[in-house]
View (spheres, rainbow, N blue to C red):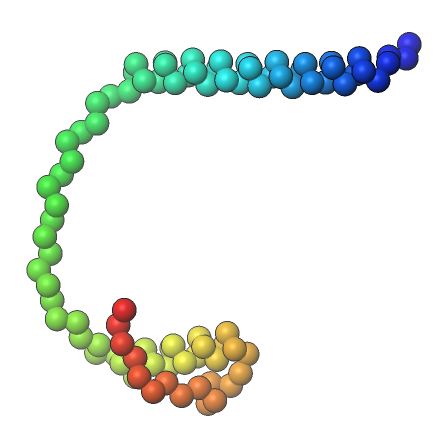
Length: 90
């Protein structure tokens, strides 16, 4: 049995439309079910204030070496070709 092309197109579109409507209905139902059973949100905790400590860099040479090695690896060059003139914290 050979179906006409318009019938196949309409059946495909109808199937997709029906599936999308079912997804929308199921999503709305699940939203209603979960909103009823959801527990109230707990009160937020007060923010913790951390004292400001001075920023120190005890391992500055090691950090410069690590940064220059990462840059050399990214640029695919030797680490001796990298010279870092200055660094500052962002």
